[in-house]
Length: 280
Image (cartoon, rainbow, N blue to C red; front, side):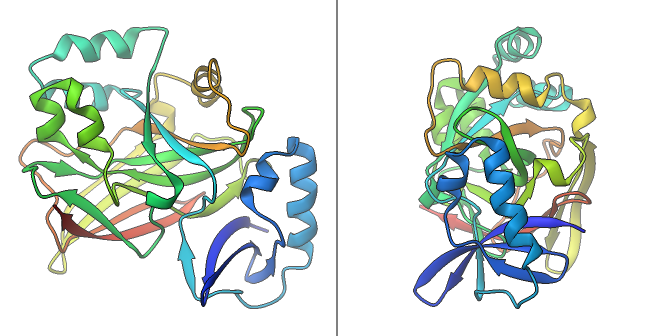
């Protein structure tokens, strides 16, 4: 039976709950608390709640499945991502170097309060003319750097801003509503460790204007390797989410527009759906 963790809003309160099959049970704690525990202890807490998951969903809105966790991201982990970054930039050799090097590209993506969940809106910048979603598998890592679970992520990106100068990457990647996560967290022990199939669809005025599918089997780097690099000189006492890069990059003639609906799906991890708005 499938198990997943959700962060829910119930009126003016938020709470964590475990979903097992069609039943729900409130967790009675936080993700930060779980990720501070050794993995086996956290698993015992989740499985105890899963055995009692027979009630209705204890909330009326699904939130991004983070509470105190920063969101980081890895770049150029797929050949298609490397080629797309070279396509948008006059500095293509940089992306060849990082794709082939031992050290990965890792960057800060979002504070927990900036991340949006399933059903909420993601944003494109008003000062950018070329914007795309990036469909990714996310690792939910505990304080020891172990993989506690998996989620889906959308690393919204301005290709025009980063393409103008790679040093503009923080502005291309980090802004309000630029990171979507969800719908929930699938524990690492409740699913095969990949590879995960990930699809991306964009709908506009009822029509599908973009669709593609990738698999994490196409990554040039493994999940454990990326996690180990992130923890080399950083500590995360309440855990962290690490997005692992995208293998789906639309061609240069495509840009996301306000009013679009973005759907990222994986048979193992669920479906993350967000509408698009413009900011700034």
